Length: 123
Image (tube, rainbow, N blue to C red; front, side, top):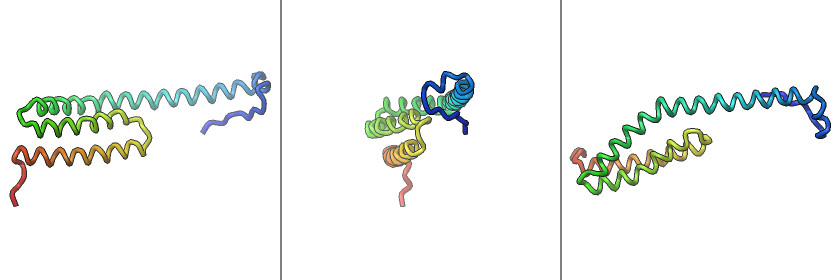
């Protein structure tokens, strides 16, 4: 946590003895924010981007295929996948909600794909 000097009035900031610690604390906060953004960008570039490329390649293949039910299932799934990538830096609650929605959409897609592609075991 950063220690901000107490300032009662704007006129008190004009004295450099209070302005310097305040500016130092603000610059420290800004630097921390930049570091967080840099780590998010590195994660997205090194982990998320390759996985998204694989997903979109597969989605394109399935969408352009002959099976229209599978293609429709891919179209239903894709917005959930892209929403999760947009929420990488979102608040934890929002990310968890989107993750849950994606999991449900993936289960729906898997059920349709298994049925249409004969991957379902007969009991």
